Length: 346
Image 1 (cartoon, one colour):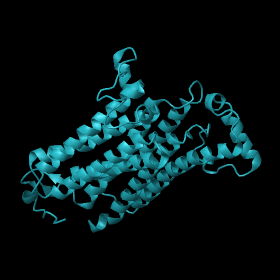
Image 2 (cartoon, rainbow, N blue to C red):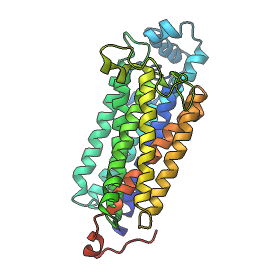
Image 3 (cartoon, rainbow, N blue to C red):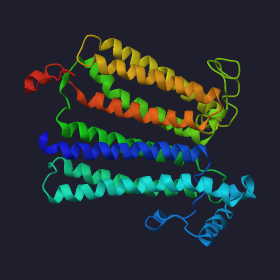
Image 4 (spheres, one colour):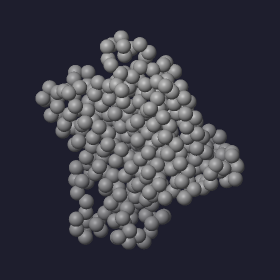
């Protein structure tokens, strides 16, 4: 572990940068800022407009797209700058991840500090980071021609891929720390722990659809939706299955139902883990999920205010991080003693 300490912290820092990108990206979407930069300049795009002429050019480019022409026509320079800075900050943090990951990776590789098994994973992370940048631009292009916002499908791909990168970085950090598979538990608890990150990832993808369709505004009441447990209007689109992806009311309904199911799942998981070595972390996950549900309720009841909605996205990333750590640390019954690995008290 001592040899890997720097590498573990490097991966944790990368994961933290991904979380920051997710939160700022969420704020960018919530403020309708994502289409304010209509060019993809991976290198020169780091430098924002510095002169009046440069700002005029950026605004003129924005005037060419449907969002300006149909939604924001007549927007002042000050108003444009307010949305520009969100998108610029999101892209800057995303670019920073590339440096924060690639530079230490090269240094550790040359210095012989990277374990052999880890090297292919490091390359995979690097490639996924590059792919994520391309996916981000692919998402933006969906709103530059005919739409006034980005495709909810592409937004879901973009957010899900970011969460896959986050999960992979966290998983690798736990493995490198020497704590993977060091806590013995029952088969049922182990299976539950390993299923939970995938459930969280699925719910985050649904949340991306909610964001892409502004579905958080489809119903502002809880626990009922439009006065009913199962609201009317869930199947207004044809064919029926398309409602799962394009009907804002249905998408919010699905997001709520999956939230309830995940809550029941983590409560069951904590009950199954009671008295065991993972009981504390299982209860912590219950607490995190309950807080997240409360934030989500606040988001819809207060018409998606920026602070609450950004907190909702942050909490989702924290829960995913915690669930990956939890899943990685559990081991089959008897495996810990068989390997001679002491179970940590904490």
